[in-house]
Amino acid sequence: MHKKKANQILNISYMAAVYLRLSKEDENLSQKTDKTESNSIANQKALILHTLESMPEVTVFDIYIDDGYTGLNFERPEFRRMYGDICSGKVNMVIVKDLSRLGRDYIDSGRYVQKVFPSMKVRFVSVLDHYDSLTASQSDTNLLIPVKNFVNDSYSRDISGKVRSHQEVMRENGLYVGSFVAYGYKKSAENKNRIEPDAYSADIVKKIFVWKLGGMSAERIALKLNQLGVMAPSEYKRYQGLNYKSGFQTKTKAQWSAKTVIRILKNRIYIGVMEQGKREKVNYKLDKVVEKPEEEWASVTGVHEAIIDRTDFENVSRLLNMDIIKAPEDENSYLFSGMLFCSECGRSMVRRINRYKNGDYVYYICSTYNKGKGCTRHGIEEAAIKEIVLDSIRRHIEQIAEMEEIVREVSLMEGRNRDVIANDQEILKKYEEANQCRKMEVSLHKDFLEGVISKEEYQQFAAIYSERAAEAEQAADKMKAEMEEVLQKGLLTSEWLKQFMRDRNIGELNRILLLQLVDKIVVHEGRRIEIFFKYEDAYNAAARIVRALPLEAVGGER
Image (cartoon, rainbow, N blue to C red; front, side, top):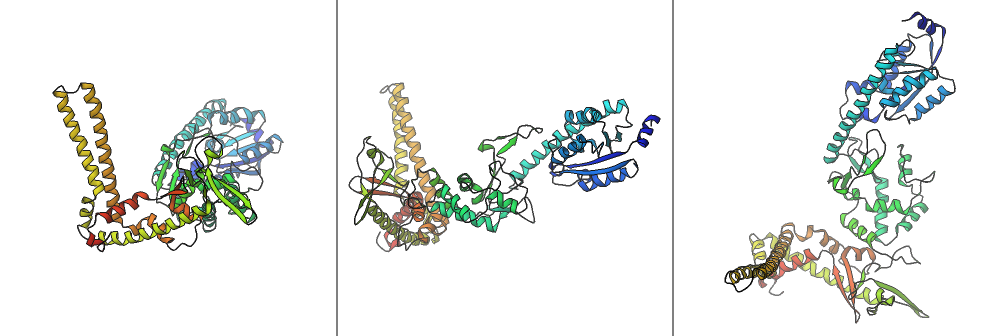
């Protein structure tokens, strides 16, 4: 050590800032190594305080800890506080475990060590690098520091790539790698990469879906939650002690909003689908993230418990896509909102009310006609629609109950499944249609060879018959697969039948039942309506199974 610098150490007292930093990158790899353990806050602190025992001229002013902050930038709360104390003259020495704890950015780290600290007459010490600006040579400052900073920068780039690859593998295996879980879930106490329903918030999520199915708008749901004093998702996370910050929050205390409700209603995590990797950082040094296309997301099903029934989720998705008009005097939508359509123009029907002394007359007319842009009135009373739809649902349920019993018996008969499908007349007709088209192709080829038709005519008609044959074969294969599925799985295990059987003895039509069972209602002239039930393919397959059976198998009549 130079004699002059040694005297400086003896004559000057130092107020030291002990700076400690641990980033998420340092902890992110699944297995802890000796290096990650040595970087822990406790070990950094112990090492530095032990070193300071041999520096009698140094007094610790304060300890500054940035736990969970990257070293790729200096926008860290404790570093900024330390820098403020330096600027105010309270601190004239900074000591760190090694240069990587100060920062991993090659340029900025070098700027602080080589320019900022010297200009402010701040002594800088890096224990494991054996660097002390008070005794360091020009070679140490101008060569050693840049090289070590460059190595730290490279290490950060390397570990960023490893962490990203590691997280991609975890996502593909259905492991949760996010910092915060969607509202309604929590991280498992046994495994932080597994999620499970959170009893309180999961119950709120279920209520939100029930209210939406009942016809409430997202705005009304948010208002109701606020009136009930239910904490918004961000507030609930903070209440649980999580350091959660949302880019959507605009007030000191977050409130429920329509956007928050809609985000919940659209999140497939509630039906057991884990979707991760929707965004990625542009660069390991930048905080900027970009949205990734959906086909690049990591999507895994069945790795966590669903909160919402898939049918309810699909019905809600359908509602969100509908043009729903809410009843002004009620918090719910009208019973038939978004479900009635004109048979001629295909546009929605408009609800109208004529008020009389003895009551209101409620009816629907075509929206195109209502605007004076053509079509016809297609008028029908709301009461009539209710009566027809309710009666149709009751009869439909009875038909399904009868078919369910027959199909269940057939599925238990050995060899009967194959005979039922083989005897289905609709499938046989489709295969026969395909055969006829193939024969026409052969006949056309013969006519072409004999000069009866031209090459252009042959190519034109052959393409038509080939397409028709393929369509007929695909239709037959589809019907066959549908029948096989019904026979193999049984109707009782089908979600569509459960929905019907659950409401078998219905006394009054309600919106939730309507959404669960009916796809749409088409209104014709003459007050005639056509109801399109959901799960038509499964229903038709069951009906074909019944029709394909011999009469004695269904009690002698069908």
